[in-house]
Image (cartoon, rainbow, N blue to C red):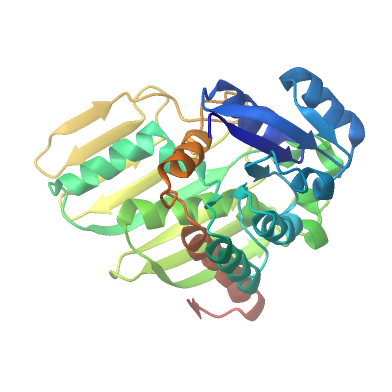
Amino acid sequence: MAKLQVGVIGCGSIARHRHLPEYAQNHRVSLHGVCDLVASRAQEMGVRYGAKVYADATQLLADPDIHAISVCLPNNLHASVTIAALEAGKHVLCEKPMAVSSAEAQAMIDAAAKAGKTLMIGHNQRFMPAHIKAKQILHSGRLGAVLSFRTGFSHGGPEGWSIDGADSWFFRKEDALVGAMGDLGVHKSDLIRWLLEDEVVSVGAHLATLEKNATVEDNAVCTLQMRSGAIGTLTASWTYHPGEDNSTHLYCEHGVVHVGSDPQYQVIVHYDDGEVDRIEVGAMATNEQQTTSGVIDEFVDAIFSDRESAISGSEGKASLEVILGALESAKTRRIVSL
């Protein structure tokens, strides 16, 4: 194909700030179509990017000229729209969390395999320069094994990000299933799995709604145990005022790595011999200061290269399982094995 013809389903904030502009910047992509249940939003994006406007997802998916789509919808719609797109012969980039149940996630994976199409989940934390650098440091071997960790993601809540503000679907359990854990925590479950190249085997969690008018949690504190034996905490919050915290701290046999905790030096390494490395690799992306996510470019390259994407459906499911385990733990007040 000369260019990848792409459709975007859902024209809310994640589409406006990430998917649409990054597709437009990719020279191998042509933005073919958009749709949204709020017609004015789709019309606005269609005019801005010169894309055809469809009345709904069914019409967009029926267009044989579209090769790939982004699913930028509430969590409870991810699976059904993704599966419909795969069955229509489209490659799919789906926002995180990929689904609201393990069964849905597996159905998405099975549909991609049956269709022979690419399925990628939009976990952008893996592509942030600071996280890439931290992983390189871990893999150098100088620090030895990771023994424990703290990873967290917090900001003031989706009302400052979502196109619907305080009326956003993010706050409704029937649309989102989870709150801060689905919005932010799943980013960190994916990140810690990727950084350590390890899997979470058990999770304990406390979830609470402390500030928001919501039927989902706005704060979560979790303990994780990895297959390697490493233990750590994962936190997610919508009540962080002001600003954001998107930091990770890795406590190793021969030193400590701090990621995203200093505005100038995105990675700081303290070695046990007293040496300290302070590394500038580029600012962490925030809601207020967007940077190119790397997700769109990876999705497009995986399609053209006919290879599995870096964040496959199986990867997305493994990160989702941690969040589902946290929900179960909070409900039963027990440690949940994954």
